Image (cartoon, rainbow, N blue to C red):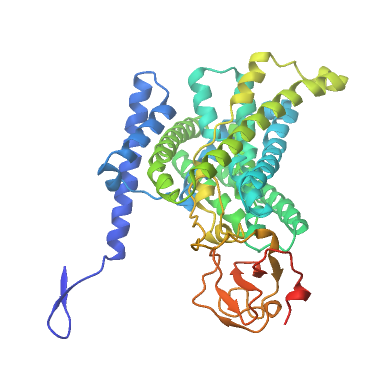
Amino acid sequence: MLVHDTDGAAAPVPDRLPDRIECMSASLLAVLVGSVLLAALARRFDLSAPLVLVVAGLAVGVIPGVGDVVDIELDPELVLYVILPPLLWTAGLQSSYMNLRTNKRSIGLLAVGLPLATTFAVAFVAYHTVPDLTVAAALVLGAIVARPDAVSASAIGRRLGLPRRIMTLLGGESLLNDATALTAYKVSLAAAIGAATGWDTGLVTFALAAAGGVVVGVALGAVIVFIRSRLDDALAENAIGLVAPFLVYLTAEQIRGSGVLAVVVAALIVGQRSTRASYETRLQDSAVWRAVQLMLESFAFLLIGLQLPTVIDELHGIPAWLIVTSSAAVFVTVIVVRIVWVYAFAYLPRLLFARVREAERAPTRGQVFVVAWAGMRGVVSLAAAFGVPLTVLSSAGSGSRAHRHGPTRWRPPRRRTGRRRRPTSGWTRCSPTTSPTSTTTPPTCCGRGTTGGAGRRGSGWPTTRTTRPSHRCRCSAGCGWRCWPPSGRRSSPSATAA
């Protein structure tokens, strides 16, 4: 489409927003339809639908031309607000409160203790293997990979016909580990971007988010049960059930609570009180949610495979040794921590406490082995990785060598010919004279300086040269200014002050 300006010349009209929305909607619809068809074919030929969908997504993403047509950049809000709440709601409705109560110790260790242990273990390993990674950024990475994917474990478990007790453990773990890992992710991310003033504030935020999620879940779950019990219309009751997970999730997030935990608690309450509904309502409700679960699980698995080209493109410019060593270290840490945790808490409490031996059955070696290896990661971890702001990446390392699981926007530092690389041990952190976002005004600890060019926040090379030739400064996002002497000897702020 062309328009004419004042001179009569034809000029093209920029792409309209409705056109871009229409293109994105068409891509999402194509992925949804294709995922459901592939899942139906996999079920028809008795194949593992999750594996088929992931492989199909990888194949579509790498085919020249096809990947450009179905080009979907994973939006974290799409997963956290659209896909995750219904899946958690379905898992909560299908869970038995009595089974969860019987295995509460094992489920609590898997759903609360294991994600936290994985977060700190991965953070420790990443901090010592990734150059210049801050503690907060390392904890963000640990929280991203700490959560096993409930969709993957449950889908493959049903496909293999695992015993009911194992499915109960995996289902109970999947109900609560989302709340633990995602809440830890939010707290660590707030610390990384400077929104949290200290780790004590982060712990308080974690506790308040968990408490808020439980309160919202209990309150809205009771309200939903009350409203549905007063209706005598199966269609209206199921319509309320379809919008319930989104209502609960958004309400909890608005009050700074854990939306994941709120959805889980509300679903458990509604599922426990489902006997109050009529037979027609329960029959329709079961069929509707099974269909929704199939659609969303298929869409999520295909979406994982389609993200491969994006991940590869975002890794451009990172040294190969950094990718291999850090990824291998994180991968091994995640597997080892889960195996050690499961085996330790499966046998040690029984050896040390007679009450545990009397209250619980002894797990078989096969059950412990399956649970120890049922730690697949899925689309929620990928969405959390995509949701890390660039501010965290630019301020994660003093040389801008930030790294995170999955795609990252890493820029190598500029190297000048004939000059020795500056050592990082001589950097001195000092307070800026202006706002933390300033990139042109040198701090007082560097002396009376002049701007040495257009500086960029978080870049890997100096942006300001002072009038004192013994020091150079650059701006670090969220951390103020940093100065270092050319010799690399450690200097104190008093020694560098004007």
